[in-house]
Length: 84
Image 1 (cartoon, rainbow, N blue to C red):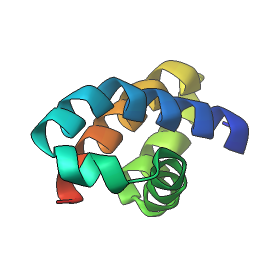
Image 2 (cartoon, helix red, strand yellow):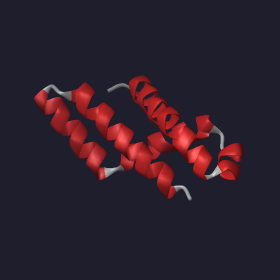
Image 3 (tube, rainbow, N blue to C red):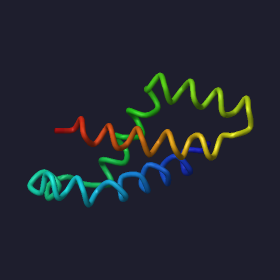
């Protein structure tokens, strides 16, 4: 997965979770820069042991796209919850 593909998947995951996050935390959502969130989520994801293992496993089995999309979506959901 290239950095561009990873960024797209993280952006998609954040945009899908953003309405619920901003509804739960309107003041925080009002001051957060979503582009900065994307970059920070990518950095956190690249250091995540589950992501690293899943990436290696998916590459070995040729299931990279589907496995990574699901993992990224779950990671971003959990990561946004940990922001507060």
